[in-house]
Length: 407
Image 1 (tube, rainbow, N blue to C red):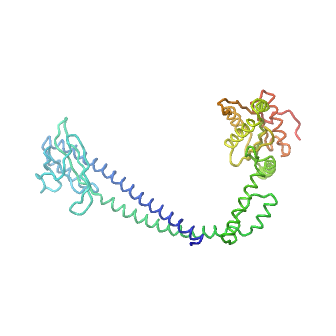
Image 2: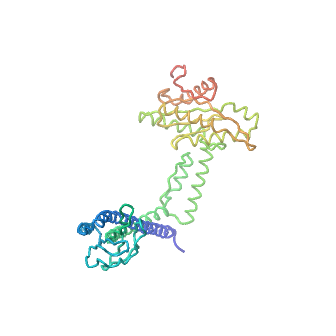
Image 3: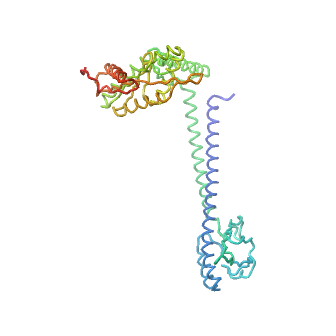
């Protein structure tokens, strides 16, 4: 039976090496394919240039000019031979003058068509293709310009690329082995002081770090069970049972900590207080079960429309509160309006297909702009929320507009 460390190391190394190898082969294949395509494009471009000159030369029967341009064509990189054939596919000019008058060994394309031949090996053993471009003048087919293009450059580049991929694969494998060893060691020794974790859990601190002590499989199972228990306890203590949002107590703790941080960093934060408009009517008309589902519906919207750093919480009954760290008034009002409009747009749908229109009234208070005492911040947001209700509900009201004496 393999040890836990072996069970971690072997699959991880196999996975990393396998992924690297597959990726390297795929890259090499795609690069080779792309370079072949580019070579073909370049070959056809040079062949068309040769065809253009050839048309004039064949009409004027000035083979000297054609010979000169074929010499020029042969100076192009990776061109190994160039020729012009007539409409019967017989060579009328060739970079090797001894081949003039011979029949072209390949297949000439149909009139007006260009062609890239299949790859083949020339007498030097190079992988080459023939690029064939039609020679035409005034709609008359005069022949075909043909040049042979070598892929030796591609093969050299692929060899260099393969060497680099092999080097990267080797380095990656070495790093993967080292990483796997460290990871395995870390995983088999994650808990050093379960008693300290239990003590921290007892004092209400749920952000527990994995311990570093060695443990056998039995201790590992114990650690797993312990952290699962801690997670369930955190959910029960920190999250509202109905909506899944944070509880009022968690919100108050977060508010105190974020206000202290804002004072240190000279930044602002905002609190949104929300109340569901006419919620009693929902309970009276459809029952408390539907009312609970409506609260879950609104909680889900709050979770979607806030950042991971924000703290949306159920404050009590149909009231919700949202803590927005590092947020100025304009951004806070924007978030509040976004939440208000989203709740208004997403009516709650009953099982029978009917919908219940929902709206909320929202008050917005800023720290330290509205108050430098965090104990007053929720109170001001609450007052602003009631002002929003006085204005007809389904509104956002900032605490800066409240007529009140500063504490």
